[in-house]
Length: 306
Image (cartoon, rainbow, N blue to C red; front, side, top):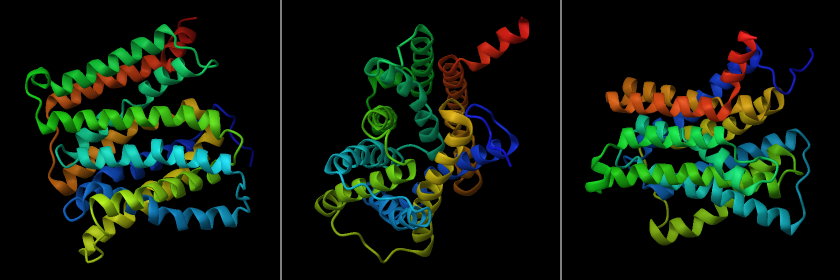
């Protein structure tokens, strides 16, 4: 069977993209359950720790060689901080103050932050007017969600929303770091090395701040922790790189808009959460910002007119 081109989206790739949105959207749902008994930093440790042996098996089965360079492992440590330890901890803490659906919407600004950060730091990805307009619309959507009270009433809910935005910004810097420091390494090895790096970082942090993890948890919380590690982390990275190989980075970015509906749906069905109209309107503005940043919808419209 011939492989899809680097920019095509066939039916199988679309299914993989939807599955990735489900498992990544599920991370907000799993975290909401785990937070009933486990503090945010410890959830981050569980998420990366239990995903490591699963990815190790996949790397071993595929016969991928482990790097021996200290420089590469140092890069994995930085990547683990930027792409796992910092954003996961910020998101999980944010979910102690706001609902999982809203957290997923705010996390949807990642693509726009990524375009701007890459435009500033990477020579081959210039900061165009389209990217700036898209980022501006994304921030406008966030401002609509937070409302005018965010300027006068700095409550924990507002701080939690800023934490989610901080996580999105950390993801953006991670994408640039990965391209600069790890582009020559096998993608799945990058995922494993990054998770090992974040595990090494989180173990002392958790022990100092939260104390040794409590293993006497309820079955539902253990299920959530294993779900966020096995499905939303290990399986998600396998899907991520499969889509990247089949359809390219631009198509992979579409998952940013697909995650919130699944996260919101899970929260509504199983956690009794409800999103107000301002959240949906804000999400629509963010979606328009994404479309402007991505540019393909407008290019397609021009081709149709021609």
